Length: 508
Ligand code: NAD
Image (cartoon, rainbow, N blue to C red; front, side, top):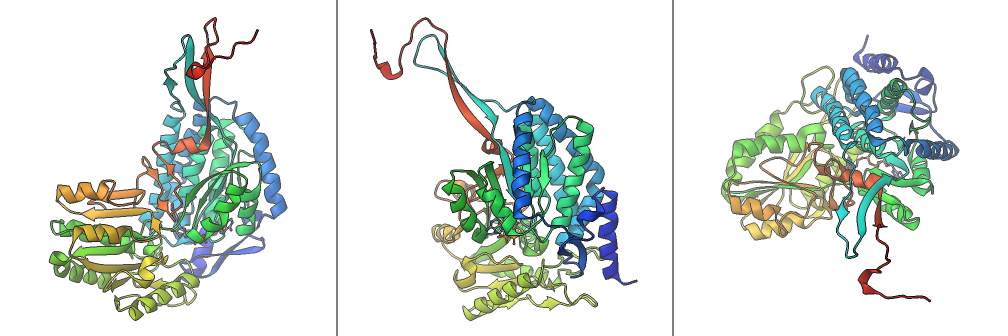
């Protein structure tokens, strides 16, 4: 029996075990592939635009009931989801590896992130509080209350096929909002698995309204229904800047709320005082991990001229020796690209880099016997004379552009001179450099780290970025506020009616 048959069988075994109905993935109209073997592993049933419209209407009905359930009780459902995810961690993590090509520790790590956000959201369900504010009027009280917002549409990318849904869903559910999810067409199976896991939690919970959480498999036309439907109060859309450019004006046209989590072009700066051993490991994970397919992947590296010749040869060695291969059968650190178009885009960017004077280490395809339709590739390190051409754009593949710098002010400018603004890091033991990097004149990204790589954020912080990354924030901190509406309430408990700002309006 060939290994490629195993991928399909293993996926089927996991889907059965997690309770995903067979009709959803055995005889549908859309093929689903594993990047590990390149083969078709399932045929999923897609939703039509009409199905999507009905799903939103049903979710709106669910909203009317769910918003009246006390928030700590809503938190109980998310607590049960966390329990179910703990029980399903090994299976779901493995399915992530099969469907997105992640190495096992990253597949499991993604599920751990789901568990973590559930724990966070359970605590949050007792902390959805507003302020009490002093008023200028005697005998008055002013306060803020937070209310459930409405149906939340979630559109996700292939590279975090389950975690991003959970960041949104755990928060939306405690905030009183139903969720309709349109996962990436490249990763429908993990989405079906998540829905089955949540359905189990809902069954244990007992009296949740129907259609509190739904998944719609399909391409962008299904996503467009969520974007345009007047009953969808918030769309949280994760994906490319191209997608955000289409979605954002459509949402703005109907004044809907959005959380946009778009592309990144993340950079690191290695300063003269950096701990180079630490920097080396952080750079290697940030740039090569997940085969360069994280929104926070390190793509640009500025190295001070005084340490360039110490660091870059070691980095190149790491690039040449890193293990690339089947994440299910080997202990490789780098798995496959998602598909052929990702590989083609990578090669195009490398050609453009060469034309701009770049010197490329790696980047070649690694052919796995019997898996000619899978795309494994050696991560590429490209020494660039300056930041130009493909360096200015996100190519969703493992390419690290390395550039030398001499002046700290100039490198801060270069760092910020790209369209995206997601994640950034500096390696330095110099407190002035570190603090300037974090200051108003430093990194312009949503995530700025010191002596930590650009990728691998924790759920406790707000996640997201500026500029063409879209400006959205999700996950921890006060990101929950996007899922609720704020009301300012003023109560008059006096016998008079003083008007604000001393206005007098006395009628006879
Ligand atoms: P993609 O933009 O091709 O697709 C993302 C999702 O958007 C898919 O579900 C797709 O069907 C949907 N979609 C596309 N066009 C749409 C439209 N016009 N209307 C409605 N829905 C539409 O992205 P991808 O290739 O799956 O993922 C990679 C990209 O996602 C990278 O750019 C990466 O940086 C980004 N990403 C960002 C974050 C973040 O948090 N900032 C996280 C993960 C991935």
